[in-house]
Structures are given as C-alpha cells and as structure tokens.
Image 1: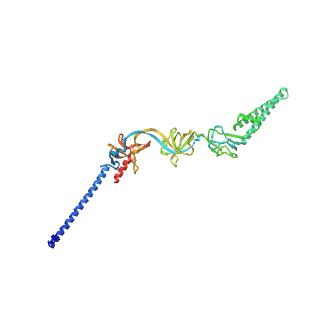
Image 2: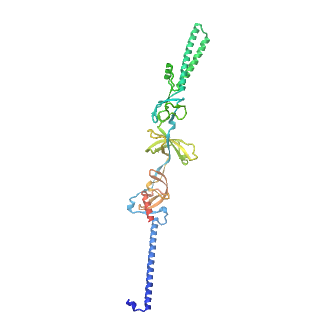
Length: 410
C-alpha cells in the first residue's frame, strides 16, 4: 500500500493495467494446456481401441489378450477332422400297422347274441369274438336236413325197384330212373353240407345236426389273427351287416406299428425303401425304437409340398400307441469326414454368424467367422473359415466374446 501511495495517479493506472494483462495471459496459457491434455487423452483412448481391434483388422478379426491365469480357465486344442453321419429327421405320428389290422365282420347278416371280449383284451387266432343269430345259417341247416331226407328216400326207392327187377315185377327203366334220382339227391346233399360248412361248422357239428335232426342258427365269429382288441362296437341285440361300418370288432397285431411322416419336398429324393429308422416318442424319452422304411409316397402334396414316408417300427413290448407324436432319424448316406470343433467352441453372434477363437500362443486370441454344417454329438462341422491344425478354443469361447464386448463398451 505504501508503494501505491508514493506513485502518481498515472503510474498507478499503468501498474494496474499491467497486472490485468498479465493475469489474462496466465489464464489463457492454462486453458491451452488443459485443452492439449484433453486431446491427448482422447488420442490414447483411440489408440487403445485400435490396439483392441488391431491395425488393419476387420471386425471379424477382433482380438483379446488374456493373462496366464485367465487363459488357464479355457480349453484349447487343435482343429481336427471327424466323421459326420448323413442324417435326415422328420416328425410324424404312430399308427396301427394296417397290414396287421383286421376288421372282424360276420359273413352273414344277423342279430348279435353275445360279445366275449372287451377293448384292450388279448385274443388268439380262432377265439370266438361274438355270436349272431343268423337266418341264413338257419336256412342252410334246414336245406341240409331236407336234402338228407330226400337222399335217404331215393336210396330206399332204388333198393326197392332193384329187388322188383330181380323178381320180374319191374322194368329196367324204373331202376335207371331211381338210380338217376339217387345221384341227384346225393349231389344236393353234398352241396347242402358245403353250404353249412361255409358258416364255420365242422364235420362233427354237421354230423350232430344230421343225427339229432335239429338246427341251430347261432353263428360263431372267430378272430382271424392273434392280437389285441383295439375297437369294439358289438353289443347284444345289435344288428350287423357284412362290410357295413362300424365293424363289431377290430383286432391288431401290435408287434409292429407304423410311423407316418410328411417330409419336406427338398428332402424327398433322399428317402429309399429299406432304410433303417430310429424313432423316439415323448412318452418314452430314453427309448429308441428300430424300424425301416416300407413306403415312399409317389406324389408331393401340392398344398404343403410334402411327401409321405411310412416306416414299420418294431414294438415287441407293445409300448407304442396309435396317435402318438413321434420323430424319426434316418441315415441316408455314407458318413463324411470334415473339420470339426466342439459345440462349446462355437459362438452364435447377434447377427446370426458363427465365430470361433483362434490362437497361436495361448495368450492372444483372434475372433474368426466360420461356416458350420452338421451338428452331431456336441460337435459342429466346419465348412469354411478354419484350416487343419489351427489351435482354437474348444470350451469357453463365450467368455472371450464377453471380454471383447465389455472391452469395446468400456
């Protein structure tokens, strides 16, 4: 203050002006330094990002460096080749083997008297499923008794005229006529027996009818095959007509079943008769059913553009049920050998591309886009992007992708 008091007014003004100018210069100098520091920081960040991607590298070749401890958590191995089976898969449904499914009708119309088996029962061949009261059988048995009576009468007549001829009391023409009548009666009798036999009557039963001179209109309807009753529409009092639905019984041999699948049109040429089939159903996830292709459709559905493929499936334990949802797998060609990487070594990116991580020193890892083909037994077939012998991450590739993503975001 004493210094300012000793100065004139002009000198004081000059000193203040010099102080103001000096302060402004100092502030400008500091601001320039800070601006330079900010530019420098941004340049370092840019340089770090450039190092992350690598100079001259595309986004598909981004890289990550790991410490020895981090790298030890990964599984790394060489790219090798392995065989991939050429497979086709499809879904479909289980159905009865119609070659072993029988609709059991009576041969003649009539009223059902009794049904002996229920739905789900096991039956043997020739077991009687139901009986009917058949007017046709009644008529056939009546004709049999009548023809038997006529034959007996003609036999007696022939014997009598023969004796008269010997005694001179009859002419030869009477004997000849009686012989002709007897032969006609024998033919009618045989035809009547055959008519009754068509209804399923045995010779012993026919002899019983003739001996007792009694007709029985009860017709037995047996099962033509051994199997299981899968449908029953028979009940006492119902009228049944041959071939008129619904059938009184349906019996199926369940040792084999059908699988019906509609395969896509582009896969149709791969399916051939006799190809081995492996079938799975959700009801038995741990079971595999074996079979083979028995029919390949001769046309493509114009609406769905699919082709029917039918397979016959062995089912000795009778586990499959008609209507079950099922999937099948068919080997349609010889196995092919190709480069492969474990499924845990392949990462599906957000844009749908598939990538792997390649390394040469087990510390520096480069992301590379690959094209995959078949996927079997936790292995991915590599069609393009890798060479034999290259070292890749076989387990833990997702970790590297996350490290790269976090580094880029930071």
